[in-house]
Each structure stands twice: as structure tokens, then as C-alpha cells.
Length: 115
Image (tube, rainbow, N blue to C red; front, side, top):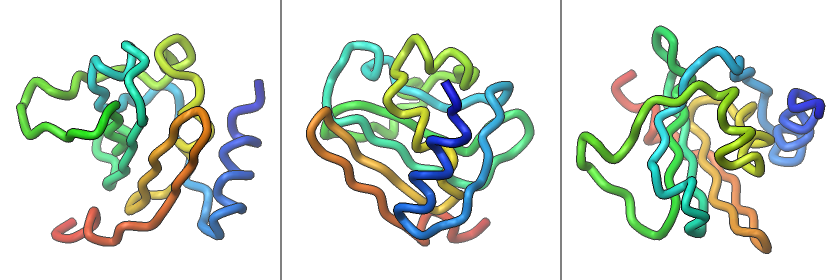
């Protein structure tokens, strides 16, 4: 599958620039994503080091618990939740919320404050 092509299509649909997420980088992901809980949420801050800046979780509630997110190489998202890969080309400062029948993608400049 051509993930870069799908990611560029999403960026074009929402009129933003493509910001690649190499599969060798890590995302912060909540274990509940693997459970199939809905909706799936993602937000991107500025990448640092070997991280992509992406934080992904499932359900209605976000947690500040330091153990809520675990590091996962992007390449493993193919097995965890392949539906989100097409959103990983969105630049820092963007979010998405998806279910099987709903998609919301928006810019959230507050994610970049203080960076």
C-alpha cells in the first residue's frame, strides 16, 4: 500500500502541507487503541529525536497518567490500527478523530504553544 500517497491526499483534502512520518520513528500510543475502542484520536506536536510527535488514543477520555502512552514504531501501526496511517502525514499542530463512519481533521495551534 502507498501510505505516502494516501497521506498526501488527506493533507490536500484539508488544505495543509504534507509532513512525512517515517516508519522508523515512534508514536505515543495508548493500549486501548489495540482493543478496538472508538473513536480513535490523534494529535501531533513537534517531533523530537526518534519520535514523530504523534500521540494516539481511543475512546472519549484522554489521560494525564504518565503510563497512558507507550512508544511504538510507526511500522507496527499496520498491525495495531492501519486506518490511522493515512493521517500521519498531517503536520504538527493538527488533530484527527475517526470512527468507521466519521472523520474529523482540524488544526489546533494550541498544540504548538511554547515550542
